[in-house]
Length: 145
Image (cartoon, rainbow, N blue to C red; front, side, top):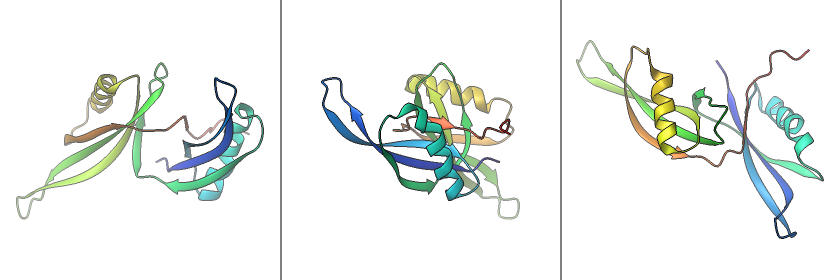
């Protein structure tokens, strides 16, 4: 199971009008530790940022799964409640889970989520879908030597 860390990177970005603006952008990285997450984000973004930058924050997320769509450029957080029945008391229990969905728009996120959940035996309800500010997601690269 992947462990996802949100890393915020602070750097100076050149605006379209030529001015320079300091930005703090969030990225998602699959890593085992905070230290590895920081090292991975530095490795991943170094080719794309000219000049100095710093990793301003690293925090663990509660994301349990990600449904990717390579044609899309936005990320949506879906809070889903899985419904189970307590056999002793007969009461329904809901346990929340967070799934990140890559999509072009809200409708695409809902469609992609439903597509990703096909075949699941669990009962669930969607509690919320919200667009995130994530710039990119870097899964573990298991092919590296």
